[in-house]
Amino acid sequence: MLAYENLGFAEHPFALYDAGKEPRLTEYFVEPPYFQTLIGDRKAPRSSVAFAPRGGGKTAQRIMLERWSAANNVLCITYDEFEIGSQSELSKVGLDHHLRRINGLLLASLFEQQGERSPRRLPDAARVRIFKLHVHYVAKVGTYSAPQSKEALMEALAESPALSKFAGYNPVWPDLKKILSTVVDELSVSPVTPIEDFQFIAESAHKLGFDSVTVLVDRLDENPFSKTSDFTFKLVEPLLCHLPLLDTPYAAFKFFAWDEVKRYYRAVARPDRVPSFDLRWNRKLLASMLQRRLQAHSRGTIGSLNDLAESAAIAVDLDAIVVTFCDGSPRNLIRLCDHVFAAHATSPCIEDGRARLGLFAFEEGVRNYCRTKVDEKYGSGNGFIVAMQSIKLPLFRASDIENGLGMKFEKVQRMVGEWKANGYVNIAASANGSDTNLVPTPAKFALQHFAVSDPCVVRLILPTTQVTSEHLSRAWARNCDACGHATFIDPERYLRGVFACCCGSAIAINPVWPRT
Image 1: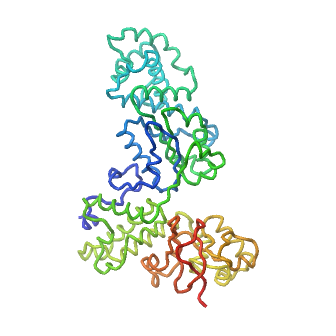
Image 2: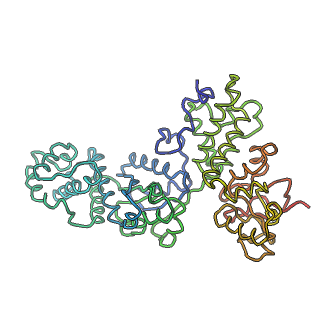
Image 3: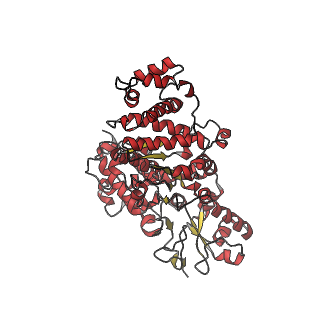
C-alpha cells in the first residue's frame, strides 16, 4: 500500500500542481472575494482583468468560469494558445492576429453548443454569412479543412450534421446550394475586418438564444516567447487596450494576467471602462483550500494535516506552518505538502509500520521544499543567499552586514539597495518609524531595519537544531492583516518598536527594536 493510502487518501492530494489537470477542482475551489463581480451579469456582460502572481490561481478561476458559463447559457471559449513562433513574430502581433483565432474558436463553439436553438432565428443572409465565416476562420484553427472548390464545399456541408442543421440544409430551404455556390470565391478573404466579424458573431449568438458571449484569455506568460513581463504585456496589449472590442454588445473578455504586467497596464488602463482585480490569498483562504483539498481526496474523512499527525505532534498546528511558508501561493502550498508527503514516504515510521505523519518527516519536507524554492529563484552561489547564511538574521541592519561580512559601509549600502530593488528584502522599520523608502543619507540608512522577504530563505538561514519550522511559524512570523505576508522577527532579539510590511501596511503588533 502506498504511503498516502496508509494515511487515508484514495488519491494523492498533492500530486498535481496545474489546475487544468485537476479533475476534482470543483470540490476544493475557493472563490476569491471578487469572483462574483468577475462573473458579473450574464445578460449585461462587462470585460475585466484579474491579476495574480504565477501559481496564484488564475487558471483555476478561468476553469470555474468556463463551467459556470456552460451552466448559465453563456457561449464561452478559452483563448490560451497564441501561435507565436518566434520573438520577432511577437513584436508584430496585432489585434487581427488574435481575433482570427478567437473568431474561429467562437464559431466552432457556436456550432457545437447550438443544441436545440433554432438557426431559423437568424435571417437567411446571416446564416449564409455565419457558414462562410466558419469555413474561413475555423479552417485556420485546425478544426476543419477549408474546402477548395464548390464541390468540396457541398461535401463538407453534407458531412457535418452541425453545419447542415445550422445552415438549414434540408428540403425546406432548397436554394441553399445555389446561394452558397455564388459566394465560394469570397471564402479566402473576409469582406470585412476581424473585429466586425467578431461583433457579428456575438450578435448572432445572442439572437440564437445565448445570453452573452465570453472570451477567457489565459496563460499569457506561458508562451516560450512571452515569459518576461514586458513581452507578456506586448502579447496581450492589442486586445487589452482596444476599448471598442471590449465594449462589444453581448460580449465580454476576461483576462487572467500575471501580476508583473500590471505596471505596463496601468500606463494605458481605463479602470472606469475595464475594471481590474488583484488576487491576494490570505491565510483564511489558503487554510480553507487546504481543508477542502484534503477532504476531496479522502472521501470527506480528513480535513487537516493535523488529522494525519502522530500523537507527539498534537500541540503543533501543521496547517498554520504550511500556510506560512507557502507565502500566499496556492501552488506553493500544494508543492510544500507534496514535499512533506515525499519525506513521510521515506521516513523511518513507514519502515516501522506506523502510518501517521511524524514531526521529523514534516520538518524534513518543509526544509526540502524551501531548499528547492531557493535554488529555483536565486540559483547557486547567489550573493544574497551567501550573505544571509553568514549573518543568519531574517531582520537586520547595515551594521549586521558590516560586522558579519567585514564589508565597508558604502558597499553594504549599495548591496542592500540592489537586494531591495530585486525584491529580496523590504524596509521593515526606520529611525522615525515611518520611512519605508531606501534613502541615500548614510545616517538614516544605518538606522533602518531590513526584512528578508522570502520565508523559504528564512527557513534555510536559521540553524535547524535551534529553530523549528513550527517555532518560526508560531513565535517569529508576524502576518500582515492587509496582504497576509509573513515577516520573521527573532523574539529574543527584538521587543518593541514600529514595523512595516513589504506592502507598506503596519503589522497588527508593533515590532521591533533590539533589546537593550
